[in-house]
Structure formats: C-alpha cells, structure tokens
Amino acid sequence: MSNRNNQRNNYNKGGGYYEAAPVKQKHTGAKVIAVLAVILAIAYVITSCVIGGLHSSLPVWNPIKWVKGDVSQDSQGDGTVNIPGNSDGNGGAILDGEENNGIALYSAKLPASTFAANGIDPQADSAYRIIVTVKPDYATDKTVIPSVSWRNAASEFASGKTVTDYGIINPVAGDDSMFNFVCKQDFGEPIILKFTSQSNPEVYGVCTVNYYQRIKSCDFTFTLDDGAVTPTLENGVYKVDYTGAEKDYKINLQPVYSNYTVADEFTTEITGSLTSTFGYTATESLNTLKIAAGLSGGDPKMSSTLINWCDKVKEINNIRGQAMEYHLNDISALKRQFTSDDYNHPKYIWYNAIYSECTLTPSYVYVPDDYLERLNAYTPAAYNYYGASIATYNDFVVAANRCNANNSGVVQYNVAITGTKSSYETVLKLGYNGELKVNVQDVDLSDTDITI
Image (tube, rainbow, N blue to C red):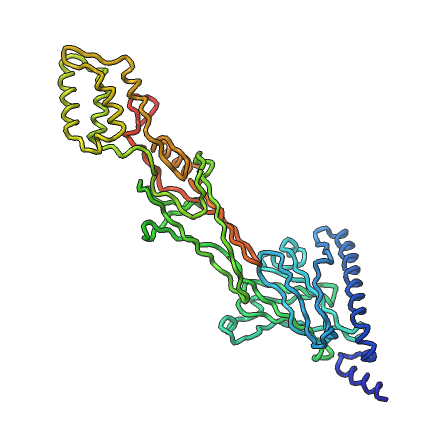
C-alpha cells in the first residue's frame, strides 16, 4: 500500500508519469542516462547524414561536440546541472550550468558558418543548439515551454533593457526537443534560459548564459614630446608630419571592450616591420608602436654659407682668365663667414683637401685632372631608420613618397591580443603626410637626370 502511495506522489510531481521504485531508480539512473546519450548521438548522426545527403548546405554535426548536463538524479542528489563552457570561437556567449528538476540539457556551439543554414542571422554574435530531454523516458508529456530572462532585471546593465534584444530561443523545425539559443549582441547581465514542462511547471531545466569579455576594436592615440597629435587617416594608413627631429611619435593602444559578465585577462604581442613598398629592412626589433619624426645619423646639416662655398669650389674647373680672380675672392669671402660647425663638417674637410691641391691665379690655373671626380666621390654618412641604412635623405624621400603613391605605410605593425576565451588581431599602418621634398644640398647639379 505504501509503495502505491509513493507512486501516486511521484506521478503528481513528475509531469504526468509514474516513476519506478526509488531504490531501483537510484541504481539504474546512470545507466539509463548513458544509454540515452549514446542513442541520441547515434540518432542525430544518422539524421544529420541523411539530411546532409539531401541538402548539402546543412551542417553535419560531430556528436563529440555535444556537452551533456547531469540530470536531477545526480550522484550528490542535490539536483544541480552542469553544462561546462564550450566556447570554441572568438569569445561571446557561453552556457554555464545552474540547476534542473527532471529535464536534462545538452548543448553544442554552432559555428558561424552554419548560421544561415540553420535560419540564424549571419550577423548574430554566437549561437547554441540545445537538446531538451524530459526525464524519465516514459513521461507521457514531453512538451516544454522555453523562456529567457535577465538573472537580475534591476541590475545596472539590465535595467530598462529588453532581454530578447540580446538573446532569444527559437525551436528547431521538425523536432520538439531541439532549440537554438541565439545571442544577438554582447551583454553585461547573465541571461537565464529555462525550459519548463507544459504539463507540470515543477519540472524544468535551467542554465545561465554568460558573456566573456572580448575586444571589439582598437583605438590609437598619438603623441610627440608628450603632446597629443592628430594623425591623418588615408586609405587605412595613419600619417604624421615628417619634422626631421631625431625622436619618435609614440602610439598608445586602447582596446575597446565588449559588454561582459565574466572578465578575461589579455596579453598583447606587437611585431612590426618596414613595408616592402618602402624598400628597406629594419634590423631593430619593432615591438613598440612608434614612427620616427625624422632620420637619425647622416651628415650634420650644412649651413647655406657652406653649401655656397662647396658649389663655388666645384665650379673652378670651368673658369679662366680675369673671372678667376673674382671667383677666388668669393670663395675666400664665404670662408671668412664659416662657423666652427662649418669647419668641422666632413664635407668641408673633404672638399678643402682636394681644393688645396690646386694652384689658382688669374694668370695661371692648375687643377688636377680628376678634380671633379674626386669631389663627387664624397659619400655622406648613412642615415639610420630603425636599423636600416639609407645613404641619403633624398633616398628616404623617394621611398616615403613611393609608399604614399601606392597607398602603403612606411611602417606596419601586427597587433595580436589574446585572452583565455577570445583573441583579436589588427594591423596598424603608419606613414607621412603629403609629398616629402628633396633636399637641394643633396642634389648633384651636374646630374642632368634630376629635375628640380
């Protein structure tokens, strides 16, 4: 008589079904669940293969992707359900366990490539396929009613927001036990998914949807001497002014984070290089975001007086007669205006040594046969640009202008930000504004191929 009363009580609590005797149920529940999982997996593979054969655009699921939640008759007897996280994409929504009472839940994350075939907006953030199984197997009514809600509708994030703007549950056509949970966008308050027995509200399965913090984009701010600089953005290249100063523009990376319910930890790796269009290879490690405001190395800047003096020294070979006296007077006058920097300039030292070999008077002119050849053999010190050796400033100008003409940066950085649940990668291209001008002092006026 007592056994019959127990069965009636179980009938009233279990959604329209009799439950087996408690002692036997406890010893056989795990086996029933295991068999059920195998049957579901095999049935789903067979069905998927058949459907895949008829409609090749539909996905064929690997049952190893399914994650099984414990049913209410768990080994601890506390009625909890555990749906481990199975995030396999770039962050987004992830299903976590909470509790159940008579309904087991299975879930698998849907790849974005399958969204359209499953009637899901391709722009959705993420999606899960959920199998809802009412226990035990002989329950007479297995229909469930799905619902979504905020865990705390009064929280700072959820207050005033409609939960279905962030996540929805849709039934899968042709199978009352399958549903798709679709996360529309990132959210900052956990979402509760609940599947309730239609015939008995006390029978249900619940899981929580969290959103792991991820990076949506990156902003960059520029400074020079700690002062803010606004770069020009052209064709995806951030451009700054070339000032000639031997210092760097510094770039600060500012990740733009999603809303989230679970914080993540991120590490950043930066690798840079001079672009192939620029035509030089850096030997320095470019692992800090920056771009030079000017070249380093090279010859010291020449004064206008020294430039004029060098030009007149080169012209001697073409002057004869009385004009030589005026020309020599001009050379001497310019030299009297020299500063100590002019006297110490390597180009002056080179030119003066060759000029001193000449014997020059209005009546007698001696200039070595190889005079111009030796003057033109002067080679300025190379410039350094991130370890790359650039012979002249004008070589640098040609390379930088070539990058502008080809819509390419001079320096390119790859930024990889990695968290435990998501990753983000972007490319930062840097260059210079406008068309850089050649330096006239670097141009050999005897070279007929150069147009100024």
